[in-house]
Image (cartoon, rainbow over all chains, first blue to last red; front, side, top):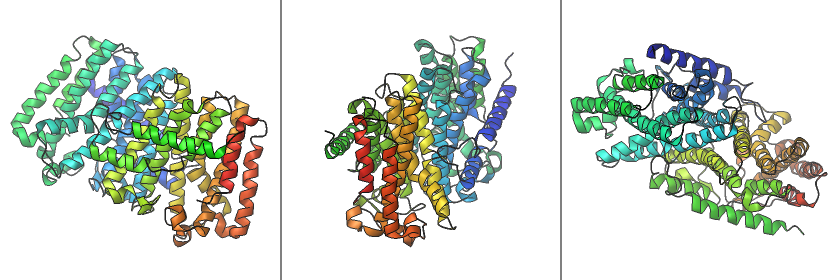
Length: 300
Length: 300
């Protein structure tokens, strides 16, 4: 019997241990030795007790093909440090200007803006170094496919492009379709990449990749919708960061368009849509199923 | 007969044409479409008529093994957009706070700080996307080796780590050894990676890689030493950016330690050192030889 609570806890613990071991001066040495302060800022931005949902999706998608969790760990680390870099940069004063993240000062508050910019750049670069290492997978063709997938999902046609559209949306009127597109890039693209990277590790054929991509896009919409609902309904204490920010920033969200009840109904439909993408897979996809349901019932 | 002037001009032109074709909304589409403004900022930060010295080193190192220039173009583009990202972020107000670069407003002046941060992030991510594409090289093992090399040279143990040490150096006393180490990372690591990436494209064996690495490290020192000398001796008009900045920022450089004449003598020795690294190679290394001499005689 698949146990979601055990799976998410084990994944978060293994990522925390692996990052604690990897994000060190010794492990990050290249042609030169990293500065103490920069590595400390990278650790501040990545060793933070997050839920590690993206590595969870990598290993759950890999599990569909019988890949063991430890074989998906390094690819999961890569997606996670990439996610962490995006938070470090998004929190900067020139961007969202957030002081707190997961109940702690953000990197630029704990250090300074220049250090936060460089720590983000370092985490982004580290993501690709992790994928390029033979520790990630023995087959170079698999590793380079992971690089291509992560770069596509996180770049200007994905996550970063979505962040830009989000900023642009603060000063223009977006309709429901615009908002969906922006969110599909800002949050959805990296969730999509996580699932597809797990599928790449598992050697998915075109049909399986297509089904898992369908799942990942619906799961990403569910995750973002839950986030928008929590921004309205949850307390800052529960979330470990400021809430009510979207309304304050004049940001357009589907919650503003549909109302809370309408948004909750839409969320339930979206979770079902994600599950439909998994219908051809057996019990090995129970992890992905549980995560979609978890997105539908998020409390933080 | 090798013609350096023709080589550097042809390389710069081919990079400009390739970037002009590649850094567009159509080519950069991922799961979503990039925003017009972000792509425009990426173009501002990359299509700027630079000398494209790093792609030149990639193709010259590849030429040692008989690789044709067009086969080294995509890897050269990757190194160049990575270099461009580092300039966009270094110019930010939180970092070096530069208003002008190559005679034009820097990206954050032409757009805004948030756009410049995201344009830099996008160019960094694009570098790895370019290496991951089959257009770069047919063999996945070669492509993933290029990713590993670029990530190592540009990350926290290389270029970004050097930038951090440089910032830290403004508020502490560095001795000659500290300065050399910082510069070896900040500027040297990406020059080293460029040469080694050319060698990877050429299928260099361990002995050739070692010789070219020796060359690349001396060439990097020569390049930086010339930069430090020009910061003291050249006009802002010649350089297309502010000069005299190192002294104004209280930055430690070898020029301050050795004096102008001492620094020029040291530069000549360093160029000779680079040439020694090439002594086992025949005329196919004439490109690399000419570039080392060019670093020794830079006027801008």
